[in-house]
Image 1 (cartoon, helix red, strand yellow):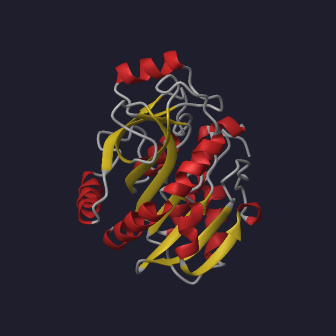
Image 2 (cartoon, rainbow, N blue to C red):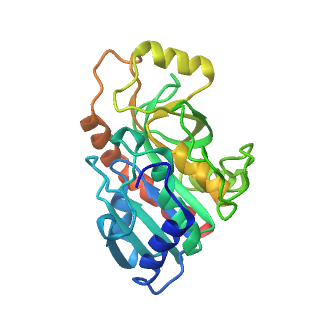
Length: 276
């Protein structure tokens, strides 16, 4: 399925297949970034569905992305979790990248937590910080809403003035404070990848107001808001971006950092889900 042929009927077919495998109606959607899929291990009574078995679903090809959907309960809430997401740098168009969000909406999801591993652009950040996403810069040059609009998904020109819910961000800040967790808050810049940014590009992003940079999230959030889903986003600052430190960047460093912050990430997210 190409990025230009995603239809409401295909979304419904995928949602119908998933609904036939589960006994509960999920309320909260969870999309886990590189190395953060460990949250899936904490879902109770989980039903696991491989992406390859779901009609019209692409398959994740990135290390650290398991490629499976889990449905069950977490912190007393019915959740659906993507252990592994899709990226445009894998060759998927923005509509297909955001397709799982459409399916979640069809299954009954009303709120969405998106997480990612990101490079720190803000010089006050350090690897291992968690950053609450206050807003994003879509630097991909692509948008999942391009093309004819299907009113079953949402309006032609959706408002993005509150892409990331003020209500959920307030809950996140309060929860982190109670846990004694330092939680940064800033703007996420989404680029295409898969090459990491150059030092010059990072300087440009800093001037534009970015605090962190990554290769995911923006298409999913645009589709979620288009569908009326409330969104909370958290970035794990897995490394400082190019030019900040005099060292090369690697995916291995990303995975090592997310492993290091796993405990505090899990504690924060599990409590947040309880309050969604």
